[in-house]
Length: 325
Image (cartoon, rainbow, N blue to C red; front, side):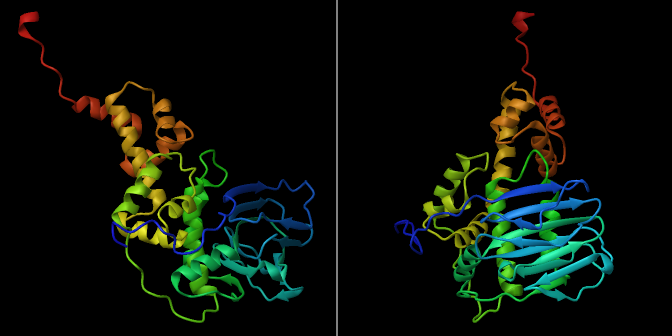
């Protein structure tokens, strides 16, 4: 797309889906457990822990066509774990950590764990998967193969990346969750989808006007509350096409780009103002000082306070006027 072309969308505009979110549910072993667990109709990540297991099996339901991706964080003995799809018991063995299940909600999956467990569940709507598949050139994916206790390194790595944020005050922004959903969706399509054709090559990066528009929108939404779909629509692209093109153009994902921009903005405030670290954290798009410190240390290698002291210590001192002595 050249710089003079108009921001015309690849396909007809659609109403963006509900915002994704995360949940952390800790059962205490005493509270009654419902026989049915209903997920929302959007991309969600749920961590479910229990110190005592389940008294009976649970049926998992979704209000929209979707895939259920479940990954165990701990081991379970073969005698303490059961899975059913379409009322059929699936043969299972010992559950090793970070083994994955991929099951279509249409089969009304049921599960039972008779001892302590710790699971992460992803609910992935089929509409989002269809959009990703179409943009990648696969066309509509009509079916996904059943996987139980699969050794899937990609799902394991995605889960390890998101795990530290589940249950914390500094939750992942919707922009970051949109990015996680795209990565997971593309992987599910290519590994578990029953595909009719191969993907077409990437179209390349963003046009100059698209790069400017995306940068302006992300600059103006440092808290990360803007949806990836909103930025993509402003650039006239589908969500997955925009995310792929953005990474080609900037060398990083939108969420990582925004994190670096927040840190650069915080450095500027620390070096040029006397604001407290908590005020700098808020003005740089972080929910609190703890989240700011964690991200700053992760990207810079030192805490914000230490960085500020080093900067001020290395700053040249103004020479005094001899006439004033």
